[in-house]
Image 1 (cartoon, chains in turn cyan, purple):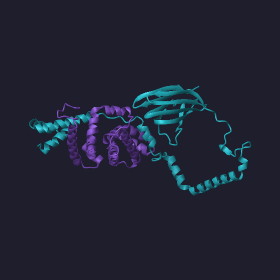
Image 2 (tube, chains in turn blue, yellow):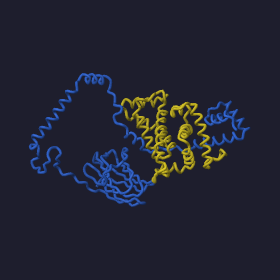
Image 3 (tube, helix red, strand yellow):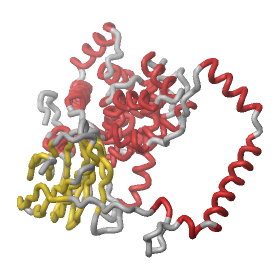
Image 4 (cartoon, each protein chain N blue to C red):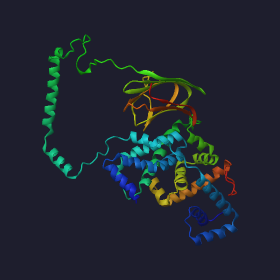
Length: 259
Length: 189
């Protein structure tokens, strides 16, 4: 049986809270008490094991994911000094119900005008009944396939087509994999900007992680994706495709986004 | 008291600078993630919990009392979220007891799994009651003081001490029973 006060001293010693005098007192007691020495050894061993246990790194994209999930307007930016006071004064004096009434009236007027003069808005050679700003007269420029390559590695099969038009670069990926794989598409942010990433053959949206210069998603099963990037300039930049499964790089290919 | 730079970041965030919150995440995500991981064991659940904790912290940032440290405040949320998660998931434990890690584990998880000692400690921790587990995690892995643990768990310091002492004894017994630790202090598995 170990007296309570020595049990407490053992715990305090492990936590580094004992004074030199208390430590010496404990040491003397432990030398004379086998049971207490055994308890002390076991607890210090365990404590050392926990100290040596590895600290696990969180995933590198976690901060980005959290930032994207934050509510957008929780803390609005404050207006600067004098200007802010002036704006507050103006805002306090204006009665906005007149502004709303005016805006409402204007919108109604535009709608009425559009209904009454609908015929006049029609395009002269348009037989489709479509009219107004939505009509597109120029033919949409077709995407041309610049690169096409197949994947067949350790249970992951598929095809990647890189298509290019004047303003956009599109990557169409058809993949099949029985086990989940991480697909990463890296692009040069200086010359390309992300526009969209969609699953082509499903109604569900794709859960992609967007980090500067890359789009990443977890793929499993049989799916096709379309990644669309907008060209910022005429420079032909590089796109890189990577497929990783459980830390193992299965596929890697870098191509120029040019014909 | 909160470290001046944490306080500054909080102030900037409340004034509408979202990026300042990004800095707070960068500074504390590793600790929050590891607390969650020690509590729930699953890498992906820990990831989700970390995300939840930071989103809640952001939403409640204007209620933060700067008499406390920011990390204590956020640890408190991490522990509470983990405890709630464990309570809820316990209902489903019997349905799928083997689901610790999915089939494709990231490299970090593999590394974590490969460390036998880490795995042994984690397995032993999971056999502790959640109140005992929390106090061990905060004391031995996060190296917090009794006072900080008391604030995080919302219990008096005296209770922290007695709970910690009991938890240590229980954990030691579990580890010996499982063959993870022997009586000789040099024999660390």
